[in-house]
Image 1: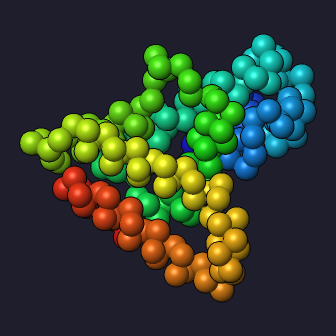
Image 2: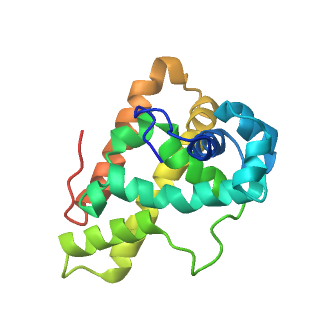
Length: 192
């Protein structure tokens, strides 16, 4: 899986996975068809079924790869948190996860959660004598904020009488301040 600014996918299979990530970052997986995935990837629809049993299987593979991609590419192999500014700038980072989660895509307690596990480990290392409940609660709060941004920021801003085009920087600044405060509460510093 490549970053949004990286080289184009090298195979049709890679292009389909990239397409799944792109589309799932914009909308719920249940609204995405195999034809949508093929069109986004710029490939023939038959390739969806050539590489995967179904569109659902393709999206499951994208979901499986996404967490590892976040850890390796955005958390430098799990050595730092995702930069909050990068998370706000690229909807594919957490918009994808938010849409999957809204459809109950992460209910299996045995399903790997590489980004959550890596962040929790960073918190534990940064605050080794801290309360384990505080560690988990902090990771939960950070994750909730990052998942909510791509889905709800515009809705909530407008509902409060703010114009995202005019007031966007004030909203963004406050949001980043809250995230930094959460990270700081467990001894982590983040970029920006």
